[in-house]
Length: 165
Image 1 (cartoon, rainbow, N blue to C red):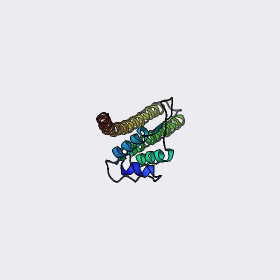
Image 2: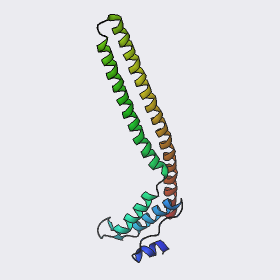
Image 3: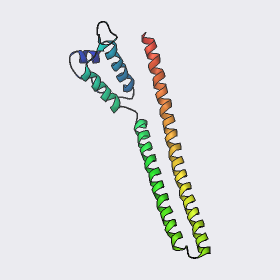
Image 4: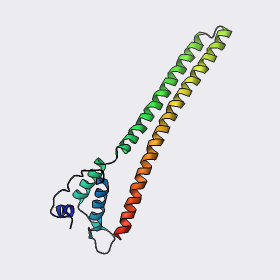
């Protein structure tokens, strides 16, 4: 019986992780808790120590790679940037509409105002698209990197599980 299993059997909380391999260790500990849990007769269910599993899950959550937190932050920032760009575009559009209304009396000035408004709106839309695309590209890059890391972790976990069988 491992020290961690012995600690849990004695009612002690598991020790906190101390290095990057701790995620794998925590996953192994979580898996061991489920595998060693008492089976409920006549069913595929089992009884586990809720507090211990919640502690392990909390430790997993606390030790998630920074990239996951960064990806969440990037998505939130992306939404804010897009919302601000839309707000700016709406403000520019309102300003352009007011300008057009003020110049409506003279035909040439009215045509110029419409052109300026359209250019301003196009610039705002183009800027918003560029900001959004840049944010999406960056978020996609970071999520791809995270996906590769998680895939590697999953392959390792599956390999370890096969070795245990």
